[in-house]
Length: 632
Image 1: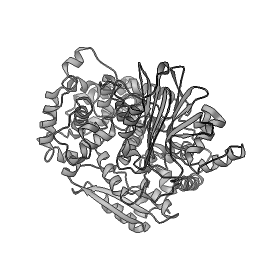
Image 2 (image 1 turned 45 degrees about the vertical axis):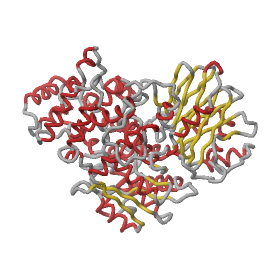
Image 3 (image 1 turned 90 degrees about the vertical axis):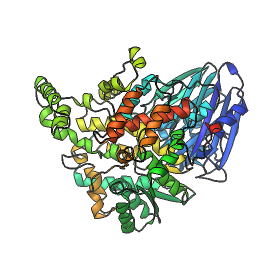
Image 4 (image 1 turned 120 degrees about the horizontal axis):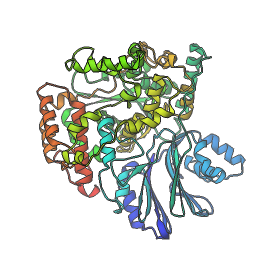
């Protein structure tokens, strides 16, 4: 796992090696083991390396023998040995044992088709000097980030946004469309970022820059193809084989490995499969507050499986001490409180191993979120004629807030497209009239949230409602929240995080599972639980999904109240956010009149991000961080 930057100057203007060095230095946390720079007139590549495979010979940027094709690459290719054999048979000669060189030779053989052959997580750029072509690609599901920016001077590409700003050529302006959608999603859906000047290369897309012009195209699309002819038992048996194979391939490394372990089926499955192949170290995190920790369950699972187990508990103060640094590492505001827990467990793991397995993606691929059961519970209301169904929504609005059944009737009165935007829905569009500032609203700004998901629903039109929800989450929640925090929080600790569930072949299998074997009215991930029953402890097989509970609700009423109030007062966000509303929301929460913790956290994370990246000032809560004003 590493980090890279790429600069392409228009009009053949020479690239400054000093600028490239600054851009590379600021992401040293992604690769503390080595660095490298290559400049060819108007194109420059920079690299920071975390040595995982072929430690002695895997340095980058990597060029071919004739020095006319150069590559920088972040990620891991799990089928690189198979590809290496195929390419060797084609006549290619290898100088290293690295997966990096496999991509280079694959490009020589297949050109811009090369991403289609790769099984893994990746972001890379290739400079083809002979064709004067810059080629970049990102893995099918967006495990690894790739950011880019176009300026009057040219193009910049990188693993992190902060490296692009280190060039000194970008303005730091808030993307107002992105802010509007962030208030709903708690992250910015791709391809936008919270910066007007920076975009994300979409998952499963590649980019070409030639003759100073950029083209972006998809090379992979997510498609569900349920096979109704297969029996439940046959599918469960194949699931074990497919997942075991993925875990085996993900072991590729020349350094020690471990795994994150919670109390759930996903991480327990990976640990169980991994531990069958090698002695495994496991790592867990929790909070020092009763009811907000799965440490006991994780400890029992570790004991059952026989792993060497390590754990850490986080206090409210410890959480607050690192929060500003983590917002800096995240590049954009991501208002998922569990990100901090992921940072701490990554820090713990990095003291023992260099590579760690984690269970991201199982919920989206195998149907694990409890909300996926909602189409079953709402079926009766959804089958009503449109007029009668909408009448139930009108009646629900007349019911007192909090009254039992009100939310059920409200959601049942809406179509799936109207009510489901993905796994998070913080502020509904009508609520944003209170959240956003008067000056913002005076400009007539309105971007309905459905504008983000409507194209996805159109592509998923033929699927049933459960599959549609999975499709939406794969394209929004998984990329923008789950995989984003996984990459940034692990890389903040120079730790490579691998996700065996988020794999092309695993998804190919999962996409063929009939919906009835994924989600029922009573259970989620039905097939996965059956497949793993001999791998995980008996009590884990049917354990309900808890997520990763964080006591923000309690802390915002107590330990964090003063900090939150000060942040609302001091952050220079009045251009966008109605601070009076935010303060009123904080008081209502403190008094226990409502649970506004998710809404408050979404606003507070944006404000903290704004202080760090837009105002470029160190907030008063900045303590215990290794970051400095100079590094911002």
